[in-house]
Length: 464
Image (cartoon, rainbow, N blue to C red; front, side):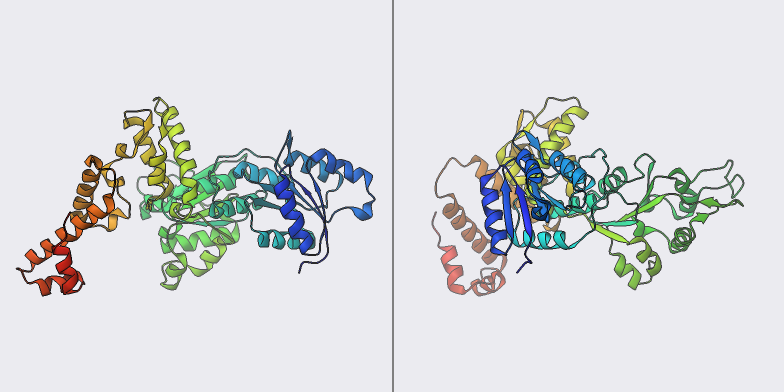
């Protein structure tokens, strides 16, 4: 049971107000609900301070009002009052605006009431408040619970320059997250410098990172400013940090610990003024255990760890991403704007996307350019996308007959009982093929198929 608290709720949806009132009252709380921000602000003027709430829960979209504006007006007069912002339309800009405007937490609708209870208890006990500022958004997209958790974390980190380790599969958007961390940080006015550890030969990587003086080694004809120096007062993003050689890991650790370094061949100490954000698609813990990555560097980089969910873990975001990428492609390639048919969206939402968001974006770019009609249909897809993934796990022979089945279905003029007809054809063809493969030995064929001799006989006698 939650401790007895006084909660004010503002939401223009009577259903939401009712649910929150009933739940919070059932937990022993006093609840006052408002349908608009004006009434809530007036209530603060008319009630004694002893009746002020311990917490305000405010919807972000109200009829003719913005919940963030209401929150800012409220916190100007009552800066210590915690506010939980609620919304069904959450994105990075909104989340950052909420946290930087002073919100205690950002709660995406539809919400779980147990989660509401946990947040209310935490908000009314925790005196620590969120930072304030205002920065532009870079447009990370998604409404799934997995993605919203990432957005909330980005919002909480919006006024820090603490080191962050971003993990996630290839193509999931790790660099986008790194850019968001930079653009919503105190270093936003500084440079964002990215370097991929896996893309640069080991013998050149040290010079790339720290720079060199003229004559430092053969071919060093002039002084070079390294990425650390380029990122001064900004952010240095080290992508695929798991591919950094051990020798350079040692030097990076020393730089992070001492805050200064030399260029190759240099004698003057240079202050390391860049915030470090790293990313990897590898399991660094395993690399540490195998001696391939320094444990002390790993823990220094992993002050905060953010995991970017794979696209298959946030399938409900795929329709929104498809529309977004098609719109971007029409602008980028100067082609007529195209839309995705519902059948196409439904099909693409079932795929596994081993290349994640990057793979989906590339496909949408291809469809925007090559699909002949304004509405893109499933048959506009490349062959490898017309059947459910994981395609990489299917042998070519299986792909061949699956595509043959698809072509048969596309040209079939019958409209009813397709499943039973094709099921009978499949069973009989499978049985006949295996019996022939086993030289007519039906017992052996049944064993290979993993079915009984009677079932094999029934398959062979199927009529269709």
